Image (cartoon, rainbow, N blue to C red; front, side, top):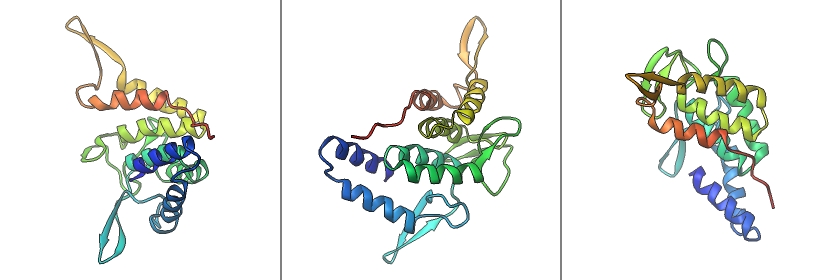
Length: 190
């Protein structure tokens, strides 16, 4: 849903505020109805049942980091609030800097249907998305730590005379995500 809101916000910026009311209504509703009480983050999943909306747990690090990045393109103030909650609940600095997939449990090695492989408690996709929101929200200190972690996972290695990315076969889309996030910049408002 948030991707559509980003598109409407971009359109609104280019066409004299058209759809800005829709964007603002979505942001206000997200703030009031879709915030997880435990983490303070916009819910990863919502379920509609008998005209009521229910938050489906758990709120995940990968989704929350992507959400922070997209929100930085729509409402930087709300994005900063969400980023602070992300850092409080999902930031990992021990061993490798990054974003944990789960705030309430440890997973040294595992697989998540949304985030992919979980390695040393880190969500590779959540960590990659966090590069974009750290950049957009001007947290260059954490961004640099995230880039070091990304380089460890994306390092070029050579075997049998050919060069490959270390984890490319496990996370093919990850390289594209990291490139997009590390080249992101805050959107200028018109």
